[in-house]
Length: 79
Image (cartoon, rainbow, N blue to C red):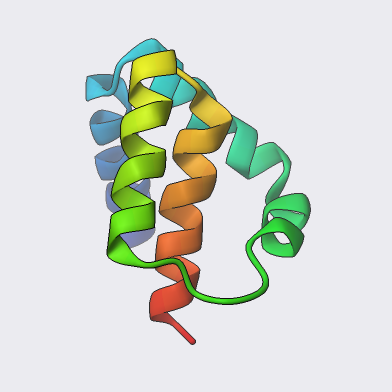
C-alpha cells in the first residue's frame, strides 16, 4: 500500500468513528464543495460564533450546519 492509499485508509477509519449524522455532513461537503466555498466567503467568524454554531448543530444533529461551520473555521485560518 502506497502513502496515498494509507492516507485514504486513515481518513476512512476516522470517518467510521463519527456518529452517522456527522458522516452525512462530511459526505454533504464532498458533494457540495463549490457551494460550501461560496457560502464560506466573507468576514471571519469569531471563536465564540464558531462554538455557538457547533453547539447548535450538535443539539439539532444538523449535519450541514456542523460541517459548514468547521469548513468556515478552516478557510478562515487560511486567509
